[in-house]
Image (cartoon, rainbow, N blue to C red; front, top):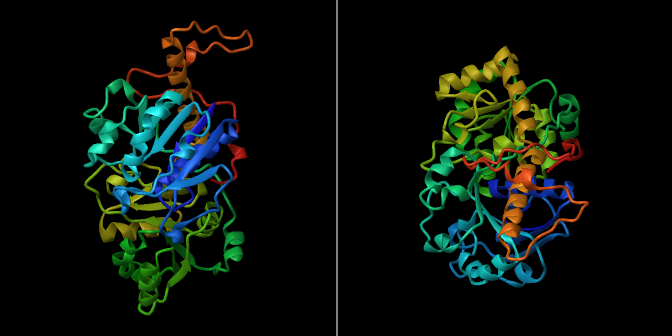
Length: 401
C-alpha cells in the first residue's frame, strides 16, 4: 500500500505531531509513505530535518495566516501512483489549489480527511471536497461533523500518544546541566506565557521546596518576557527551542512536573502536548478545561490557584494520587501507541480499498497466497468507530517520533 499525506511536518504543532506519530508508524509497519508538506514561513519552530520522503511543495492557506491564493505545486500530488491520499487539517491548507486537481487524485486513490478543526470552518471551499472517509478523534468532533458529512463516512480514531520512553532523572539532569537537588517544574512551547499568573504561587512554594521553573520556548517574545520576569522570580531558568522529541524527553525525564495551562476554548480541542508527553513517566499537571476533558486520571487537574498549590505539593511529596496518575497514563499510552492508532488507520484504508474492488465492474479473484480480507470489513462498525486489533509490530522498535 502506498500512502500520500498532505500535512504539516517536523514543526511544533498538534497537526504535525499527529501526522508524524502515525506516519512514521506506517513506515515501520512496512507501508510506503510520501509526505507533502508546506514551505514554512517561520523556520524557528522546526523540530527535525526533513526525511527523504518529505516534499515541500505549497504554502499554507488563509486559514493559517496565509494567502487565499497561496503557492501550490500540483506535480508532487500527481506524479506517481498511490493508493491512499490523507489530508490533515484541511482548513489551513491551500484549498483552492488542491481543489483544482482533486478529481485527478480521486481517480488514483481513496481519500481520507483527518479533522483537527474544532468546529465547522467558515471557508466555502472546505465543503467542496468529497471524501471516502472522515476521521476525527472523539464523539465531540463527530457531533458537529454529522451536520457536514454522511454518518457512515465519519470514523473515530483517537489521537495517538508517543510510545513509552522512560529515563533516569539524575542522568537526564547531568546531561542537561541542571541541578540535582531541586524540584523542577517544566513548561515549554508556544503557550508558556499562559503560566505567568501561576508564578506568585510557585514563588510561595519555593520557600518550602527549593525549585526551578524551567521554561523552553522558540518564540522570541516569550523568551524575552521570561527573561524580564527572571529579575523578579530568580527560580526561572530559560532555554531556547524548538528541540527534537528525543531531547524533549530528556527534559521530561529530568523534571518533576510538566505544567500545561490552557484556558477553555470555544471549540472542540485536544492537547497534543499531553499525548506527546504522557509516555515519559513525568506527571502532567494541567488546567481543568476542555483541552483535557477526554482525559481523566491520566493527568492531574487543578482548578484555581489554591488547588494548583495543593497539586504541586502532592507531586513534590510523591503522594499516592500522583503515582496512580503515572500508572494510569502509562496504561493509556500503551492503548494509544502509534502502532495501535496507526494500525486503526491501516484497517480503515484496507476497508476502503476492498469496498472499491467490490464495486468495480471487473470480477476480482484473489491470488491463492492472499489472506481473505472479508473479516477486515467487519471491523468498521456502524457507529463509525474503527475497532481493530493491533498489527503484529512491536512498538518498542519506535525509539522516538
